[in-house]
Image 1: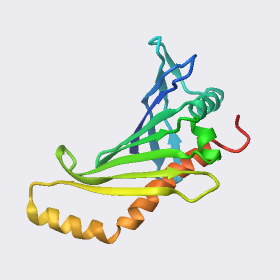
Image 2: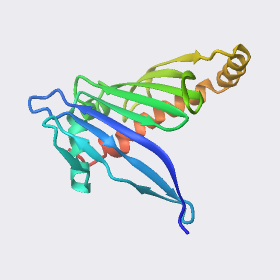
Image 3: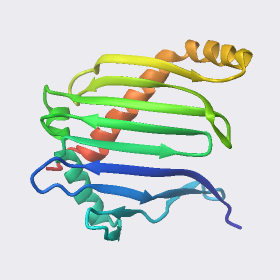
Image 4: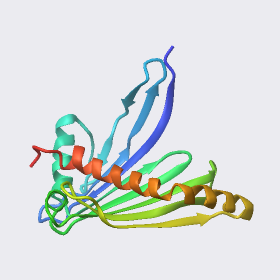
Length: 192
């Protein structure tokens, strides 16, 4: 018997500010874990193009989309699940891959919220992480601002203390995730 557990709904917003820009928005992506095999199965991904036409993502389209994202000057990635939401913004005036591969860098900002209760998005904690990221250099201009919107003062204090102990790890993980998205997917070596 195969059991599927819903992991995440990913949304991807893409805007390219080039002469022939075609903004794309990933409307529906679902990942499931096959608990018997431990494998991840990807669901259907649909993009909305500027003309309002829907199309399903295929491997050849995915490669072209990665190239388009790499040539753009800005794109955003969203991740939403039952307990948290995250938005990552990548910006480079030189173009994402030119900036990442060169000395210009890519300005990376991540906004993450972890919800206190599943059905209540009014109480949360998280943070805003920012850095300039490069393929060949260590990130610089690293910044982190914690955010707490919790009504119960004792719970807020406990979460603050717990989060303060791992702030450096949180920042490293967010920046590393952004670098890996560019390094292994969008600006993958050999893609032009």
